[in-house]
Image (cartoon, rainbow, N blue to C red; front, side):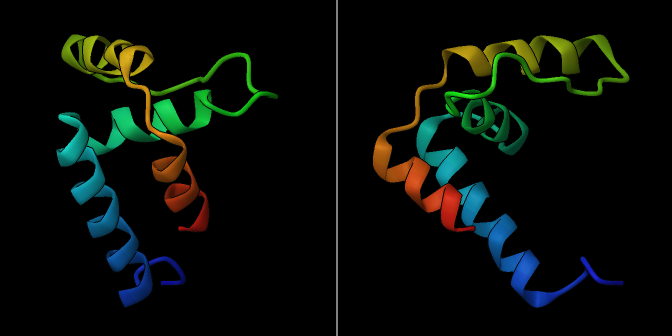
Amino acid sequence: NTYWTDENFDRVERMRSIAADLGCEVPQLVVAWVLSKPVVTSVIVGSSRPEQVAKNALAVGIKPTDDVLQILDSL
């Protein structure tokens, strides 16, 4: 599988670490990162359970620093 690589697993671990530092989960971090892009006006996320919808909504309150955004951009 093209995506099942050590490099991608390392990226996920890096995102987990950043998310933990910010007190959130990786999906929330990723939504916050996408929303930080000036050209993005909305994010469409998939949710199969009500608690996922609630967690995704919390992403709007996550404000990664410029340093964190640069790290995420590099991943």
